[in-house]
Figure 1 (cartoon, rainbow, N blue to C red):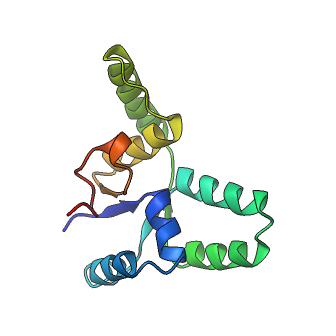
Figure 2: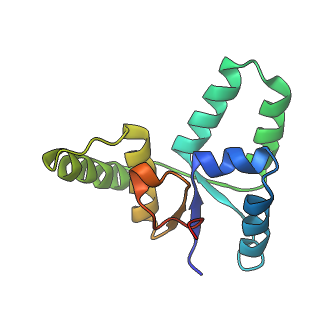
Length: 129
């Protein structure tokens, strides 16, 4: 099992108590000590919680982050993301910049992306049956 980068949607399911996601996390944590999210996911979750003034949930999320890993966006992952953007755009496909940045981080770090966003990432995600 390779390292997994947890996408924003999966992390949201986790915090909502989704049993499937919790089960996947428990199974993953038998092989790895920590969960990993991208700096982009960190930004998206914090932003969403601040908009809703969800201060209690913000504390819970910050506690989660303190116990796990936030994988940074580097110049290499940004370049990979830009190459993905260019290739997709040339083929008439448009994907959100946030999703491309997350993909670039996963590719640079040789990680599988755990996502439920089939529209942008296809059916090859960690949670697809």
